[in-house]
Image 1 (cartoon, rainbow, N blue to C red):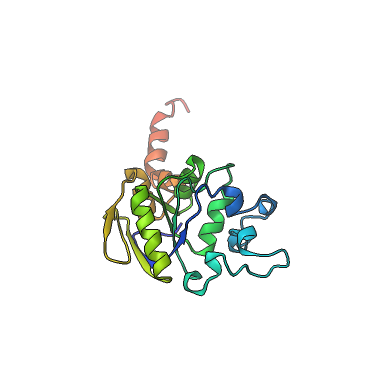
Image 2: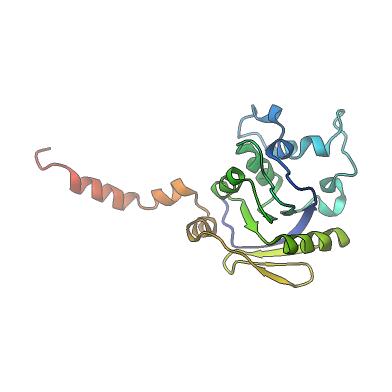
Length: 199
């Protein structure tokens, strides 16, 4: 998993509330193996027409936003069914952080497990960021995980909270299994100490 410490990148606004996991990646693509790059499936039905051509009106199809690595969403982003593929699609496209006033619970948890940082900001702050991005397409936002701050295009800083364990894992680039494996020697020593003397 890629370490996440400080990211300054183009951010894209998604002004629609309740973007669910089926919009992020439609169900028919869930059969694809994880090894396949899921970026082409991201927002597929919103990004593409039936013939595969791009829908010019969709925000990610606009040139200033194509290289975005930060997404600023409306409330309840990632709601709907439990599908880790929604996070895969965002991550494979290049996103490393999603900012919103609220998230679907399972999406929120899956994001941390796969190196995507979900940031909760008040609705007014998220709306201000989206307005700035809409006014100046291609503008950058800075996410400083160590300092727990988001800095908008105009320099305004917003603090955010994060669970200390999840923060540690993202900073170090490890998931829960990788974190546990870091204690492999201590675990082995403990197990050896528990062996009955008659073995």
